[in-house]
Image (tube, one colour):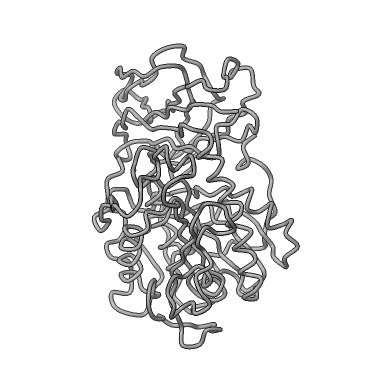
Length: 430
């Protein structure tokens, strides 16, 4: 089974509650909602020429300029954990530690605000990049990703008042946010991603279980767990977390010059010391780089095609890859976003590309159609994870180098009553 489906270490609380308690802000109201990717209204093009395309063959072979992993922090201890990766001599007089970090072939760069009291509890707005202000954070984010074109994004913030290392699964396109310090005190626009409905859910694209497992085995005084059921907290933590996974989905196509493979958020407990937070970040980065290596080695990467068909809740359902399509590791899953809440679905696959009407969508698989899963269901926010157990009989015939097309058929309250996602072309590796 894919790692997302395995049991994991659980913490006492998901960190959403802790944020409101830590910063004295009013609690955020929550609403249900669900909704193809276009560039965000405030999101500039990231076709900069200061390094070769991430998806290029030269990068896969380890030549050319190094890909960059972007790390952000907010309140201590997370900004201190990220400090060694800052290229600013003011923030980091000890010198940038992220160049070809540990000889792994990636540069690690970090961005975070500064506070008058570096060990603050009630920290205020801060100064510099990613001040605790919605408008400043969004403007800084789109400017920085335009500069860096990160192959992965890891956002960090302080969570509960404990020793937790909480990996968030869910980030929401909210309309209601906990107030910040400077008017307008909520996100503008709200929801921030105008192309998708209010409270649209985006799932983490980090190797979440692997991070938890490795941190648990690290010997650090940390309690790692995955928050499956909660949210990023409705404050600046979730706001930047949503920006990260939003950017990753905008650039999920491996043919995109700004291909971004992974993004997600970690809440770090407020009792975690600065050295321990730094060590926890280093463990997390090692896992993330292992994941990037595996994705880049398993070329070609899963390729979306066929486009999406509008459904009853928006522009349509999209299908994304999680993990690596390796027959040896059997750790591959697909994630569906933007579907009708609680609708039943079936994952199908076959060979070759096509485009023929089916229900209110398009069947994008040419031949040899197979059913890849039992009947599944979207959650109340229109998302679901579909783990592929490649040892099962329905996958007989998958071999190293073989290419298969996957698509999600689902019920919908459109005229025909059924619809389909876009399609994902997957080539399996050893």
